[in-house]
Amino acid sequence: MWLGLWRADAFELRSLLTPDAVLDRLRQCGVPDRPRWIDAPAGTADRVIRGWANDDEVVLYMVRTNVRNSWQRVLRANFVHTDDGCVLVGSISTRPIVRTFSALWLGFAGLSVVVLLVSAVTTLTAGHWSAVPGRLGFVGFVVALGGAGAALMTLGGFMSRGDERALTAWLKDLLTG
Image (cartoon, rainbow, N blue to C red):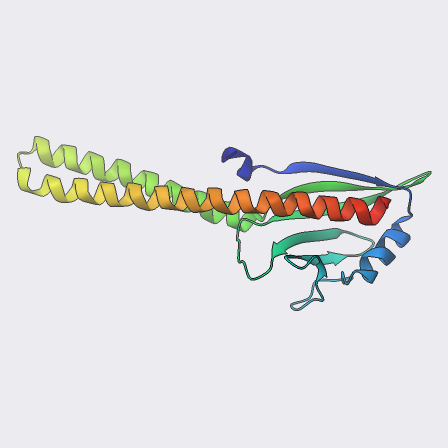
């Protein structure tokens, strides 16, 4: 599951409605036509739909009330016209800036562990025994920090998968019901 947080999943939803009718239904639920800093929420009591939808793109994500989750998964899709309605085609993934920052953080933690271990070994081989425990203690700290970060990323990803399922179910009910 943890590695699944880093990739985008394909999304496709068929509807018998035209794209204009889909947009009208989204408007009725409070989804605006362009990005806004403060938007009218749609959704259920414990989860709120955020984002925007227009002719060019649909960007939606679901958040839990009073919960901040950087690993929130976002639906980015476009309309494809068909003879009997439309298909919403796109992907669901975590924001690229979140993935980039997290990869840099974990990479820096891993690089720090390697550099500190090499430093401890070279200090040990040079005969400076007294400096080794401090370096190894710092290695433990960096490993703990990286482990805590990975645990928080996993928790955020687990929570966002539930929000993703709720969003797709809400969207499916809205567009096919």
